[in-house]
Length: 156
Image (cartoon, rainbow, N blue to C red):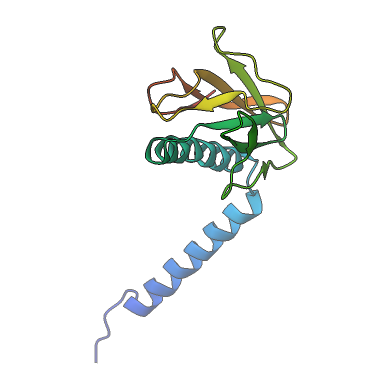
């Protein structure tokens, strides 16, 4: 009986599985240098601003975003004219390796002590801004809006 030479399908599948496992472990060993974490945080903040715009229009409410170097919080303008923490939104703290740095438009009103720096109005407008997300002190990503368009996320 003459046996054909070559590999069986099972042998090929086992080799492919082993190569995949080794490649996956190598990727895990490399780890995340923080870039993915910065990207996720930028996307989370962009989505939050989009949600606040929608919430403001539908609920005829005025929202604000208080930006700190290590996090941010959502506030709502109450009937008495004071900014208070918005129900349904909890303050967010960044990972220790991430920092936020806000640049506002020169025509933007100055925030009161403890008040929001970015306004999200029921007219579907937001304060024009540029927000830098830094990873270990180096600029990583920028979120920006002219006040009318959606927030853009750009890499440095």
